[in-house]
Length: 88
Image 1 (tube, rainbow, N blue to C red):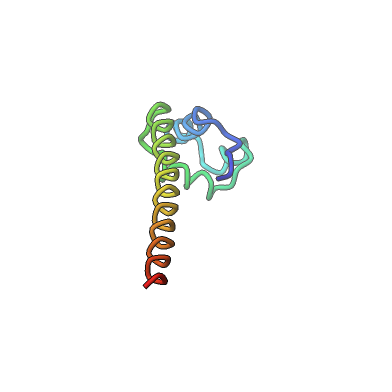
Image 2 (image 1 turned 90 degrees about the vertical axis):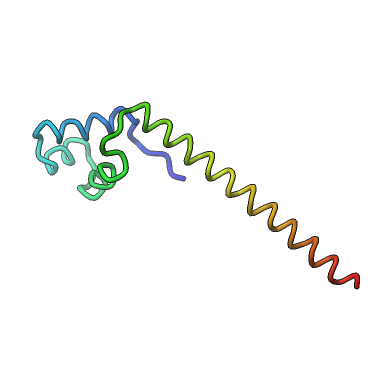
């Protein structure tokens, strides 16, 4: 996964600045991001605080790791099943 140029606190600051009345195009120009990026941030992180954002990122990383472990275990089970089928 690509690492963001912006920290969690910078993203939260951007969202709060728009809530306070700063126009989105102006914020995007200041930060050097596209409006699509801003709206993606708002959809993903809107209504959160920084601690909730970091917890969500931790959970996403754990979920990614668990999915990888599941796929590896499933692959091993398939290999064993094929080996047993060939013996008979």
